[in-house]
Length: 207
Ligand code: ADP
Ligand code: 5GP
Image (tube, rainbow, N blue to C red):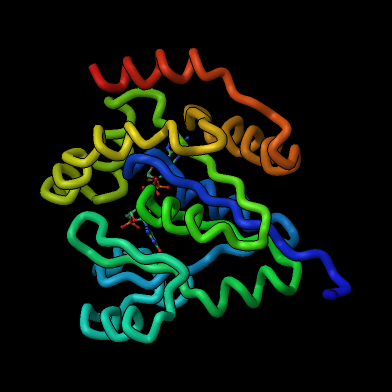
């Protein structure tokens, strides 16, 4: 038997632009929390660094990695492929590190279905309003309206997956949201969220 404790898996998902990448980066500043750096076929944004934000690869190379079963999960999101690298993740978890994932609901489903022998906590992040989400997307995409529109097109479909997650948090004030996430992570699944409040908030977002 292993002499050290295994790490846990923490997944953050949300409609695009709600702030999960920002939150995942903040969480990774804590000792023992490492980000799972995904592979993707999408083009890098101007501020993104290969190997740090993503491993940016071609569609051909992505397909080769799928064939070699290198991914713990992978999915097509907004017409690009994204995947989490199995070997690296398992190695970190076995060393007792906590791994944080910024992945969509399709990848989350795949990881849940695998029923791996590591603790798993899934968190869904909601924007405070649709208007604020749009503002955040426009800011991040540097007014690239086509990309913003494509992501907003999936907003409803993505939003409706909130029920599949262990915990749901609204990212209004960044610091407040981050603190809530850390509280949930440290509680080891012992905190429950106000489901009726979240249901009402989701209804507002859908209007
Ligand atoms: P996601 O990964 O969910 O698509 P990002 O983390 O890329 O979203 O955030 C989208 C944009 O919103 C970024 O420009 C980020 O700096 C900004 N942002 C994230 N959280 C907040 C917040 N609480 N308040 C204001 N802006 C935020
Ligand atoms: P972005 O292009 O904004 O970085 O990410 C787009 C979407 O892809 C987000 O919902 C993000 O969580 C998701 N994503 C990023 N990496 C992965 C991954 O490895 N697997 C899956 N399934 N989704 C990912």
